[in-house]
Length: 268
Length: 158
Length: 103
Image (cartoon, rainbow over all chains, first blue to last red; front, side, top):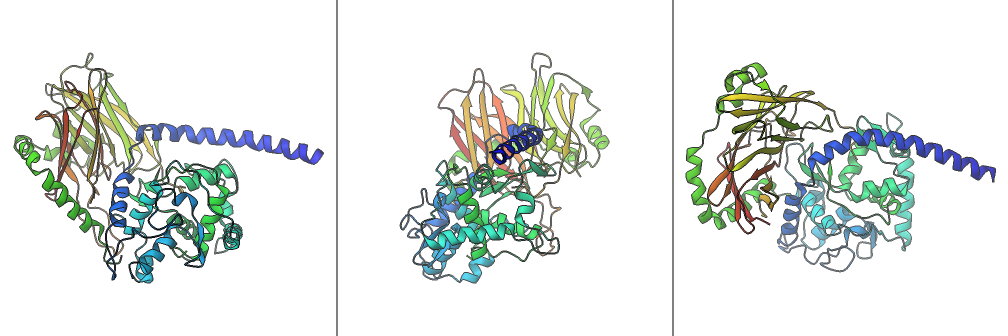
């Protein structure tokens, strides 16, 4: 009983402390975000993504309209909110990026290496096909509940792998994702750091990617976000759609399950 | 995907969009000819030179309401809003958004015809922490309000 | 490609509020790409808001206006169903336009 009482007391104290920390920083952001309004330039990228989805491409000159994102061929609405998931045709768990790569290579006959090489915008670029597709597909899940499947053994093992990667310390700075993201009420400069080990923190983060990055003027995906976190940790480059990338996103989506999708978000 | 060129696609899309709007767009073409961009004001590199290019150093006026964030998460997109109290300062014909420490301080100029309210909203780049000025022109006289915006560098930025 | 401008025009008490988002990189000319080559300046210089064939706002912009620029203006005399049009031109001679009806 005393153990329960103490942990309860501790939780209350931590809760109070983090509340103060969050309200201080968010006061600053609130003013900024209020002035920003709800006009998100991601809308243009969403339109692009829809058009790309229906445009024939690749050596086979077919569109992605028959791509199965988990809810059946061509069903886009609601698909993003249920990813990552196990796909029997690919025999692996895939996030949206891995799945799009699968459809581009299998349906359209394109080279997987090229798909991966052009996944994310490089400096000076105004957006890639993959970023546009992900923006549109995520928008088609807007307002829906984050509900990644965990029925298949490989889906559960993706979560476990994601969790171990989240806590895995490595690199010249002996860093892990958890170094920044397992405490509540912390920030780097003015950026609030979500506690991704909690439902609230994971849901807030997962539901708002992909996002229009105002500093870059383009839409970035959750896979890119993972890769950039790895880069900031001085880890080897995370490969788009790889087992590690999918596992980390599975960890986040399962922790955030039940939250409501609100992507594409608007970020600094 | 390797061949996909976002700019090319945008251009193609634009051609499509412009052809449908071509008829409607002929009228404004005429209006363009009547307008004149204040090119010299956009090329100054200091606040002093900017005010010189505008004709004088503006007087401070409480009639200009200027909203900018105290702290911006990123200098690439800083929301600005100018609203002039028309009862206190009637007859505004132009509004300027000036960013003190940018390479070229003048960011935007708005010509306000009598049918419009002296109101303008946009988002500007702010190179570094410094003052932003909202300037209103009335019969060749300049009035202004200033506001400081701190620009922070982003963290990881989830 | 989908439209390069998004406009909303809404009737308020005694004015019409127009909010527009334009798709444009607004390059300053000071940035470099991945290979280190300078990206040429490319920004919208002129924007007009037109209501019933009359210009209700004329804006001149520099490269300091943010990428995918936002414009908010208010004018008098609008009625529901009226057409509001926005036309822009950039320093490279490209242009774009879009229109909406007042809600």
